[in-house]
Amino acid sequence: MNSKVRVGIGIAALVGLALALLDGQGISEIPFRVFSIAGLIATLVFALWERFIWKWKLIRYFTGVPLIAGTWRGELISSYIKPDGTSVPPIPTALHISQTFSRVTVTLFTGESKSVSEHAKLIHDPDGRWRLSWQYVNTPRPGVRDRSERHRGAAEMYIGSQPGEGLEGSYFTDRQTDGEFHLTEWSSARYGSAATALAGDAFADARPYVREA
Image 1 (spheres, one colour):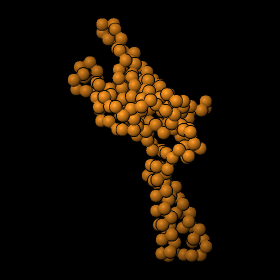
Image 2 (image 1 turned 90 degrees about the horizontal axis):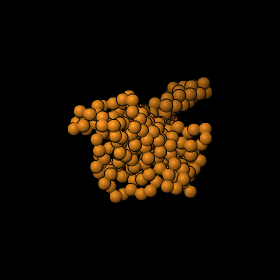
Image 3 (image 1 turned 30 degrees about the vertical axis):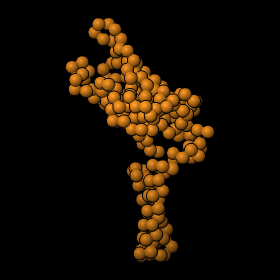
Image 4 (image 1 turned 120 degrees about the horizontal axis):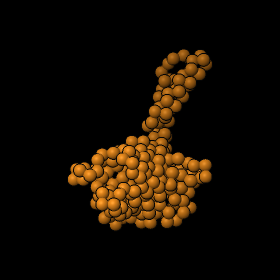
């Protein structure tokens, strides 16, 4: 349960206690039992909402919040130019998203590195589109650190709302490189590495996640 929920419950309990005192009930076991039960119920409802209820199709129809949790697969196109003057070919990429109503975490895998989000959020733009924005730390595998150091970056992706659309976006790093993402396949499975995700057969074409029929 996040801090905002705790603060809300605490305020509700204090207000209830103040009203009980003003009503002349005094401080007794009964009000505290009522507040305890009310707090427990509120905590349970908030926890269920945070983890499960908001995901229901009917609820999302009204809130519009996109459900993008799972593993996405596609490619990354980097602007990096090799010392010999040639560009890097498209890099097979997997992106895992964990999502509750108030929190999103992003983990990106390629054959050479892993990126983990430090801050991530969903943004609803004025034009009605949703995008996922995050800052990350990229940690290359030990075998490639002679040419690819640990670095930081930021990325954002727009979330498709039509059949066949996936996640499309871009990124940049503190190494003065940037690039694009094109992720068109989705799976509910969670993978621990690029090798297993890229070889997995539980993927299907992306489908709309914002307002599913």
